[in-house]
Image (cartoon, helix red, strand yellow):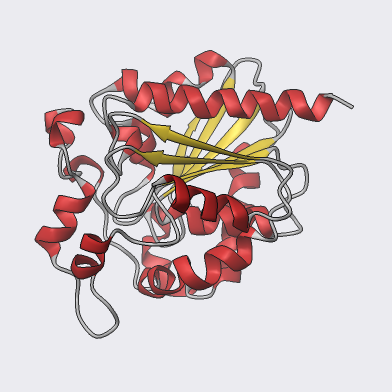
Length: 272
């Protein structure tokens, strides 16, 4: 598994970032706009960042058929994280940060008993229920999604993104076949079942202009209620942001908010 690694000189912690569907690790590097890149700005704040290409993306694309089962994806990710970090200083530990379809692997990793010493997780671009207008566009097992409609959902309010990134061409990648099953099972089956097994602090961000998932107060409360074993769930709505939070002009604010949460997790671990 390939990825992007940016090492802080004296890391407070390591952030492992997992991108969404139809993209790659460059999602967290905001091509052409380093000032908006998590990979480039977080190390200056004391956080090493490993943005992985998830199973079936990047260098593992030729082996996508080997990741159909969730346990295969978890095994591969755990091995890749250890291989990339090697003997590097991990500071207080590892924090997982997922976006959109990357939230599935993020929560699975957090629920796995092998993820010992995990500081916490951050999720964004996902949810339990689609907006009503999105349900008609995204399709079902019986019909394909409407490509133009999906584009409009993911890139609504194009003025909040750098013009050269609207549409996502600089970070586009083919989607492995297994993600059709992930998409179908995630909101109603796997998300609630896995969330109940997470025993670390959780940060959840809803973008103000998210058009795929409901992010109203009731929807956010319903999401928080799933994490019954988590010691803390923090909900946040990012203003002037859309589905692709790390690619918009609000990325700096979004990253700062989550990194502050990471620091809170570090401080909480050292407090009796």
